[in-house]
Every structure is written in structure tokens, then in C-alpha cells.
Length: 601
Ligand code: MV4
Image (tube, rainbow, N blue to C red; front, side, top):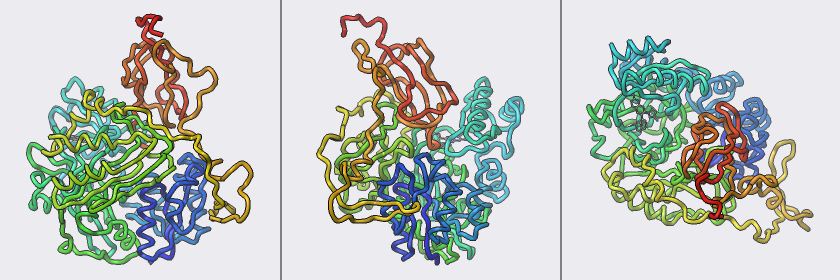
């Protein structure tokens, strides 16, 4: 077994991995950015090292610095969690070369599954059913048109070869829409993966997203842990996941079929560790097709842990260490039903706009069948730099109906002061008929009128003027290594370390910036996060309604929709597509509608 594991991640998944290490008796090392000095994951491991600045490129994606810390800490294995370097084949290769174990599959498997066309070709050869379409890149629109007409038929899906998770995914319902879809998917592929090549698939109407959890070791054992249904997605982001799928969607026969497809797919790339085969279940024919493989532990692995009792993270660590899996296929038994709600700092009523900020009081639900995997706590902060997930709320109960009731109970117990989260959204959705009947809820999640009913009543705010608490515990970094020390005596002048480091929720506008407008609050719409301006949907002079989509900012592989904070005219547009944008930077100046009489002031 490993002598020490470095966890190259942050937030809830870093804590999840640290817990597995502790239970296995393996010392662990946390890493953190300058923005995460007070983050919970730093305390979860046995030691911690500062990586660098707040930007992912300076810290959690900083391979050079991570390799340095591996050496300095004496770790002999790295757990990448999900996101950041988890599916980065060159990183896995660099570790392999340095004699450090990457807790995940071989770099060759990451590589094979990274290219969606290569993966489709491999899967087809292995007898794994893929969505009908091309297994090679389609070079020109003319080729695409011919293939769509002669071989696939409309509607067709156009997908970027480097894509995954819905990036670079377009649909052409009819022939006249193909050119736009082809060019759009190609552009997006170029922008996000530096690969403009695309391929074609038959478009399946209203399919379910059903994925299967795989575990494999280096002794030739490869098993599946049943399926998860993740059909409730918004803009390709999963929001609710469950295991197993509703009983009327997947029966034992289909479960065995999907499981075998997953195992065959994993074996075809000599997989090792925990992985997931994502697939589509056709609502029309009941066919199941391979979509892609995620070569890492996933956010939603917990629902599978709840119904199987198997610790997926521990099994992944065992497999990487060359041990046999603790289970055989016959030993995997599904019991009851588990549901996960992603508690994101987002405002569903404002098009799921990210709502980062500082948390005040915080109380997690508990009691029977409740699990909360969170990365923050009381006084914590969700920064716009990283994923806006506060926690994952997971419940288990004997069946889907009871698990739903338990989730609603747990959502009701959750107290998060100071942040807008998806708690009201989940509470409303789980009470809908669409959820009860196992609908994919595609229309509901785009239903502006329904989402509007989930608006927050008042802006929650943490009282930043509350008296500072004096603490005599300090954290120091010596040559980049973190130590907790106690100072006996007076606190440092100017208060505590914690108070000095406390940051504000959003930046204060410069003098004169927040010009008041007739009848409508500040004019300036500022970026709530740092990222890349992916799409701008308005131009100067446009009239916009409150909540109307202004632009889409790409950050952390997520599309973040920025909507108008008020109605009015775009008197100034401060942004351009393709440009980088900082948190707090101006997006647009929206002045009150011209028609509105001055008297309204
Ligand atoms: C599809 C599809 C229909 N036909 N591919 C790809 C990424 C994943 N996040 C959703 N993807 C889809 N790929 C073909 N050929 C429909 C979707 C899809 C979807 C699938 C299942 C459940 C929810 C979905 C929401 C949007 C798109």
C-alpha cells in the first residue's frame, strides 16, 4: 500500500479522498491555493502545502509545483479527484515517469477515451453499441450533409471530437439547420479543446442519461456497481442524480445488459480503478448506447455507494496499489434507493446564475439515511474562481418515494445563511408530478415562468460589521508548508489572522461607477466570476427585460449565463466574445427604459 497520498484537488472531493485515506491508515497531503487558505479541505489531510496563486493555472493545474510538493512531502501516489488534472493524460504520464502512482487508469486509457471519435471506434471494435453515426471526424459541411442524408437521417447531433459533457454539442433537426450546427460545434471544439473536428450521431429524442459505475483492478477483475440515472440536467450540467434508475426505467434484465456494456467498454481500454461509462437510453426503442467514458471518480459516485455499500474511493486506491478489488460481481447487491441533490451557489430564478459569496450561519441536515459531502462550513466562502458547488446532499431510503420524502425533509433542515443556493429549486422540483413519474424534466428546467416562482425574497447578507472574535491560534507557512501554531499571549496588532484575511462578497465599485438610474438601481452589470466571454447575446442599444440572457461566460468548463439585473436599454456594452473577463469587471450598462417618465424617480 502507499506510504503517503497527495490529494491534487480542493473542496468536497479532496475531503472525501482524505477520509478514505484516514480510514485506510494512509497519511495524506492536501494542497491549496492562496484563495483556499481557510478552506476546509486543508484541515482534512495530515499535512498541507501551498501551491500558489488563486487562479487554477497557478495552483490546482500547476503541474510543476505539484510535482515539487510530491517530492517535498514524500508522497508516493496522487489522487486527482475530479476536474482539474483528473483526466489529463500528460499529467498521469509525468507521474508514471517520475515513479509516482497516479490513482486512476493508465495514461493510455485516459488518452483513448479523451478523443470521442477514437473512443467510438474502439468501442465499436469491442462490440459495445455506440449511437449510430460516424466513428471518424467529418471534415467538411458537404461531407456532413451527404452522410446525414444518406446514412443517418435527420435529426442529427453534431459533436466536437475533443468534447464531452455536452461541450461542442449541436442538433440539426432538419437539413437546413445542419450548416449552423456543423459550424457551431466546430467553433466550440476549437475554442475549448483546440480541436475543431466534429463527428455525427443520430439524434435521439428525449433520451435518458444512464451511466454505469465500473471498478477494475490489475488482476483482470472488472465489475459494475449498477447504474445511475442522471437525466435531470440543465445545459449539460447534472443537477439531480439517483441510483438505481426508477424501477420502471431499468429492470434486472436491462441492468445486466448495461452492466455488461460497461464492463466490456472498460476492458477494451485495460481500465484500472473507478470509472464511469455514460450512455443514452432511447425512450423510443429501449436501446442503450455508449456515449463516453469518464476516467475518474465522479461527483455523483455517492448514490452508488449508498445502494451498494461499497466505498468507491477506497476501491480505486486499492486497485492503484495493485491489490485485488474487495468484491466480485456476485457480491454486488443493490438495496433501496439513493438520490443526490447538488447544492450549488446558484440562483435558479435568474437562469441559474452563479451566486458566490460568504456563508454566515451554516447547519447541515442529518439523521437517518442522510449524507452530506461538503467543502465549506460556517463562515466559509464560495469563491467565483472555482466550481460553485457548496455540497452534495445525498439520501438513502427503502424506495424512490421514501427517498424523495427523506430528501425533502433534509432540504428543509439545511440552513445556509448568506448564499443563494439551489435548495428552493430542489425542494420545488422534488414535489412535482414530473419527478414522481420519472420524467427527464427537460421542459421544466427551461420553463422560465416556473423558475421565476423560485425567486429569493430578500438578498441574504452576512453581517460583516459583527464584532471580531479574537483567536490565538495561527496558521503559518514555512517554505510553503503549512503549520497550525498556538501563540500564548496577545493577538497580533490589528486583530486576528482570520479577520484580516476575510474578503468581501464581490468587489466594491469604484467611485461614481454605480450611477443611479431613473427608477431602477445601479446601471452597471458586473461579472460575478472570472472566465472567458463565450457568447454575447445583445448589442448596444438593445432593450432588455429583467432576467434576459446577456452573455455566457465559460469558467471551469461550466457555462455561466449572465442575465440582466434589471430592465432597460444597453447603453454601453463593455465586453467582446472570446475575451477574458475578471470577476467584478463591467459587462454592460443598462439604463432605465427610455419610455419611462422621469417622474418615476
Ligand atoms: C445526445 C442527445 C441526443 N442524441 N446525443 C450529450 C452530453 C450530455 N450531457 C447530454 N447529451 C446528449 N447527447 C444524441 N445523439 C441528447 C443529449 C442530452 C441529454 C441526454 C440525456 C438526458 C438529458 C439530456 C439533456 C440534454 C442533452
